Amino acid sequence: MMNSYVTFLEYKLVLEAKQKRNAVDPKCEKFLEHIVVSFFRGHALTVTQAMGLNQIGSPATLHRKITELIHKGWISTGFEQNFRASPDYSEA
Image (cartoon, rainbow, N blue to C red; front, side, top):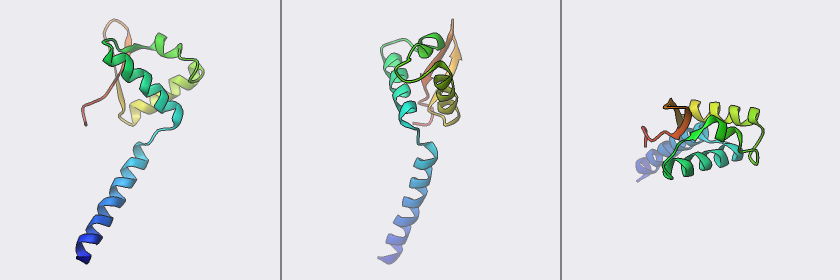
């Protein structure tokens, strides 16, 4: 029984470390919500549209948030007609 508990604790520590590494701040989370809603409405967010989300932050802040979300694997970007940010479901 003790081995099972120790194994559980080991998995718990690994999971907590992974969650901490992939965690995002509240502004990033709000920005990600806008990206996801836009994506599921059938159109990915363009950079121009993203920079217009001034209720979340300044364009410089939003640019940093895009970069952070890309590096953490939460979104990917692509060039269709314009630069567009979409949720990244490749690891889901």
